[in-house]
Image (tube, rainbow, N blue to C red; front, side, top):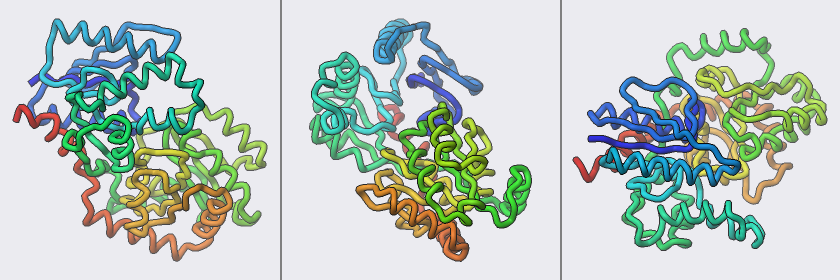
Length: 373
């Protein structure tokens, strides 16, 4: 069977992009042909994948998206496929992977009325409606229950079109037998002393992930604790604004910004705490990657996967609405108590043994291929 996948941008370190790759590879493993339509492709192309980068340009992103849709539609008319699977909202999809939240809900509640007169709003509203409208045919792969009621509220989407997936944590994120050796080598490489404390914040989109909140909390720690605490911020984003904030807060060498990278498991094993005070987050895969590596987590409650941290008792979840003072208090408490961190680590590893945190690609492929099984 010929399958086509479409996403606006592929790069190896994005959460959506990694989910796409694992689902597409699972479909290929089951014997199906894979074609990909995209605007940007960064990184290697897996053997057997046909990747088509649309030769389109536009001043505005929404116009570029429309040109991709038209270009893809023309190609599909000449070379039809059995199913079209999208990782961004757009017309014509058989299956949509819901990595993003409800655009219409944000537009109505977080923007002023003038915003809804712009072409950008009309584009994204129309593309979302094409997926979720009551009479649309698109099956929706949901990775978080949080957003489903919002789509139903705005579009009346029938329940039977939603398919809730378990998380899809890659097995290479699980704590290996030689974790202590990896940790020691990592900390030697980054010149971390035995009594140094390492915070990691991982994820592209530094503003959305709350890097500003993390920097403020680090700066507000008691002087002696702050002095031996380092923060590594890792992701595909321009760090300039946050580097300036870090300097203004007097954090100096305490903070390092690193580009997205493929050896994240080493950071999860080498760190003492994952901090993730996001402003919004549909899921937060990195939270579970930390959990299965045995790394305690400090997270804001808005993240779709924050409830796993609470259920596993593998860290602390901030209250909503967010308060900076609570983040600072919790951070200081977690860094100051090695015994509690050891307990959270053990709890996370025990939870990882029994909970289904890994089978998302298999379940997604089941839905994609269901009508042709």
